[in-house]
Image (cartoon, rainbow, N blue to C red):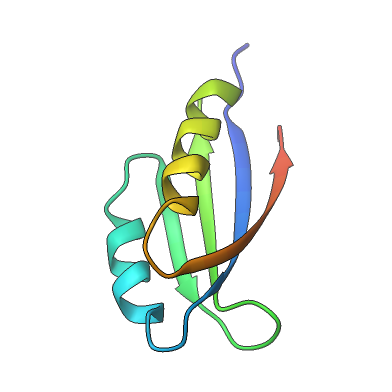
Length: 78
């Protein structure tokens, strides 16, 4: 059985970039949810990918987006 890898990416972003980044991230393949949140982090992204390599490519592309200051990725296989 081939299980998808589910990851939650917690983002700190530059002030005022939340809505634009959420919209941009939501368009990426394998992104199942992107939410603006309040608290220590600004955006939470849920990614469901078939492999670690694909997950890594997507997290790396998010990290390179203009306005993303810091990310933390939590990974689960179930």
